[in-house]
Image (cartoon, rainbow, N blue to C red; front, top):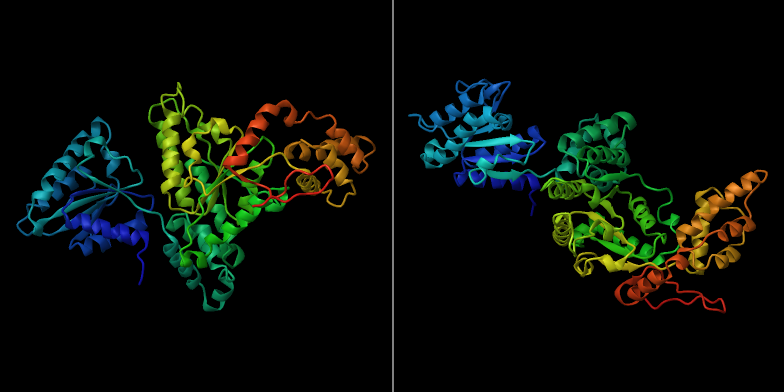
Length: 526
């Protein structure tokens, strides 16, 4: 059984609205040409012919000929629509109007707006053989309040996987036959399709063409870079480039890493065919500097997908309603991007005021409500990683099962993890082969956070460079460590309370517990 694409389903909905004699339909889309084709098909399915109107060409028939009715002005065309419904030779017609919204605003648009409202009231009462309907095609989903209740709003979906696959095939088939085999994405067809999810049909087509011109093949990485421009255009999310090394750049947190790699298979075509649900994400709680942010960035690299930072605080506005509208636009952008990692850093600060009296006019409470609903109901491939330092400030409803797939608690690194963090830090500074005593350094750094340990390496490099530009030694790193007052001392009570919460309310992020006095490592029963 063939499944309809999202656009085919939307076209069927339009056809149903026309058959039900809805006289004004407001279609919101940025893809005028692609959507127009579906609208014409929907009109034909409902038994209507179609005409188009815009301010430059006036009214046109479907073969491109100028129509003998209407004119370049919207008032002339709306008058022609009214007269067509009373014609002695009736003709069922859908009028696709491209530029109408700009003529509906302000005092100068009052006459056109009144004409449109009058038609919305009168057209459903005409005989079926003379039925007329107006489809307003626009990039905006904000219709005039006077039309609410009289016009039906339809937000046209972006191309789904099946439509992007057709665009990919068309791009390859347009090449000479001898070039088609080498131009195909080398067995990585799914990746080439995923890379274009979130782009419009025209954008996907242009990206595939650009890849073929520059590289003579379809390169998913080049196509995916176009999404960065899409995110920048929307101005509601921040794009972060992937970090080198992926999960290998993170010392410790082996349980989280294993969990992530197990979930990564859910995005494969086989998993989709099997019916495996896409993972929603996880919340990771722990003291500052324990690798929570790093694991989010590393996941993006490991999964080869964009990393988007979602910042509730940056979306707040002093104007009533603006914050909610911006947050909704962010959700919509995430859904259109497709597979991506959405990183919410220190979420308890973003939602501060949601569970207590606040002077922000209820914005935080509204943000929490919309976020909880979105996490519960969303259907896309976005994977959310939220971090928190202070669990006491988190709303209880955020921790309920179903919002996130898992809640992890990450403690200060034990001896094994301190060594792993040190090795990762040395590797990131080009010192992977430097002979230092990892055991001695790990012992010296007991109670240090991962960030505090990682910071010792560049500090030691400065010392070694100043001392004759020599290589760093164990003594350099230990000397740097002894200048640090770790977080475990400055925030001892807070970390103790956090550990007590983590024991009974979250899953340990590491499978290795603290080192016993005799130096043996005990594995947790997980």
